[in-house]
Length: 372
Image (cartoon, rainbow, N blue to C red; front, top):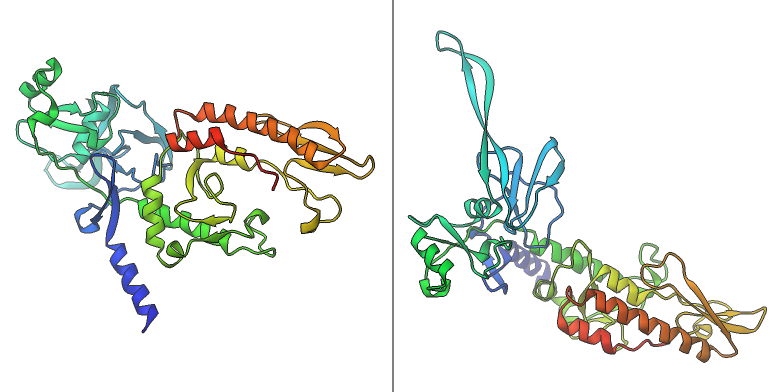
């Protein structure tokens, strides 16, 4: 059997599909044939893998995303200013270009332009770009009741009468039983997830001689299902992905892991980089020589001059590590480090409580700080 042909056919099939979020925020796979191409793409940091920016119709310098974020590049072509989000007002400028003619009505070859002010809102721009229009339905209702949430699938166009009834509480949007189609554009969800997959795979293939990857990944491995079927990882990643402000998100294998170092769907979770760094923030030390037999507990070092063991901890947000007490045994030194590291984890967990899934927060409350 020709495996190269199978691989090629699989890639061709997958390239015609893309992942989106449905109206309930659940992962859904659709054909790219149903998605529009973004005609004027920009390089701007996305809120998540599903966000898409499209240029506002009638303008040349404004873009709106399907999450209600608006940016413009008036000052410089590749530099973008982000407007306010939520329930707010925008003044944007539409541009009309036309060919200049002389007194005899003949073209001069010159192009002139007119600029027009347009008063609008984020929700109106999202509706224009991402919602299918229906006759008589030119009012916008936010399904979750939060008028600052302009995610396109949180919006529903309704008639003025329906809007009044919704506002007064006489009816719910579900009871209206209105059809609302949404316009999908080609997104970078799969591309982003495959990039993460390739990064994880590189860690799992690293060795002592791999300079670009930290030594802590030398014994990492990947679950066979993900190894043979990258799309299974992509689906897992997008189903579990969430945002935490502007932080970069990492795939972690240790918080729920069994100590094997394997990237497995039962062991992995997605963590904000700050939280992931905090959990891994302990250097490995050796008593005498860098050999497996001389490895000391995490956070512990040995002073050959005094014959004592001492710990060191750098609390999250601190500029420098704090040296701890000297002890006769490595077990005593680690116990002091363990107590303080545990406190650091609990404090940081509390700070992230409202930004991370409950199952991750609950795990942080019970996680053990182990010596190795």
